[in-house]
Length: 265
Length: 338
View 1 (tube, chains in turn green, purple):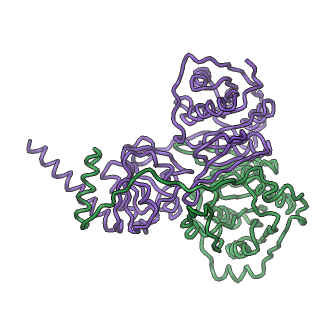
View 2 (cartoon, rainbow over the protein chains, first blue to last red; view 1 turned 180 degrees about the horizontal axis):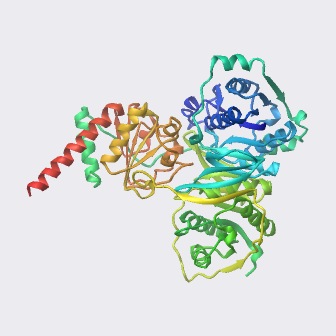
């Protein structure tokens, strides 16, 4: 049976967070309690694990680093088909960049026990960094393939996958144990079912903090992060807009004229 | 030439058509940063048949090209590339390392950063040396720009997409040094690229399109998206998108324009149902004429374009398509008569 770890990131609900704007005067973000949701790409990572479980049998552990309220995301993953949830929560973890996050997750995977495959989404919706998967692989000394769109062969310990590449894809052979980051094309995540929610009640969620992981404070959170944000600036556009006026018909005529003047219609 | 003094490094990449444009752009930027720091530019080039490429990198501004030539390096193999590059960087400990946001670069960059235990900023849209000599790495967020620094660890690493910096003028009379680096004859690969397969892409290439029609969340649903796609077809335009449109499953990731997608510079850009997120807008700011269609008059996109249409795109786009088709058939008839 495969031991699979899926890393999921709680992100501020993009439908709300995307509307947040820097205040041009205070140069800071408005403080709002935005509900956390699973990073959309990570639900594809979880679905990849669930499909393997259905096919061959697997034990799926979900790792999630975030505030205690991210426990809801772990519970959702259990209801979708994961077997065990680990919520990494500790004020010391706050402010972690990709490097400190990957280090903390790698140490957790190590402590959790043997693993055959680690699945991550290829990027996060909030920071748009793509580093956590490959950095986990480096810390665990495992091979990694990023941006996998299809698992072609998943029997035995030598898999073949297709990963996105310039104007096409690359076909890659990899030896397990390994880390795989997935694109949204790999599968279509299922939605929650009532029976899944019932089954999840009996499953285990454990909370781990820095002490439990046994890693020094200078390796986690902001202290363990080589990078940090120094400044947020508001940008002004140099273009001056002309809003087209009039009826729908007039607006269309004017726009066709603009396109025609630009030589494209 | 003192090789130890190269402190701004670029990982260059050679594709089928020669050195990737983003590699030359980064060497050009590295030249500028190195001049400010009073140091030299080193470029790393791994692959096969590299002589022409190495000279191109020198013409673009590199002082030293570290060249690893072996058939083991084609196609790209993550583990072997990481091994060679990390060894070289440990020897030369550069201050700055720039990598193009190609598929190879996006995989290699974190492998190198984690090995060297340093920071890495994704998809920067500007790089500036601060008064303290620190690399300020700019990324767009929340309608503004965020500055990220990596003050203590070295190298300071950043990835940058194709088209963020302009193509440098190539000076073929520039002189530089080419240093061969060792490639192991054998290397056990746990992950092996077997082949790279090209796929036919549908529609017009965004990078070379003179008109781009891009759709966002405001398309509403798949039908709304199809209307936008039809407008692109009528205008013979490239079809671009924003992240929400990709997330909704209306279009492929390859069509995404912006910080973590494509940087494009068409003659005309028409953004439809796009709110004006900076992550998207940074990819299109170089367009000559920018037009936005959005039903929300307060959408930030209207502060960033030349012409704005405040209308529901589900009504406006089909009407525009119809008007353009009528115009075409009118012109068609007119030519026929003549």
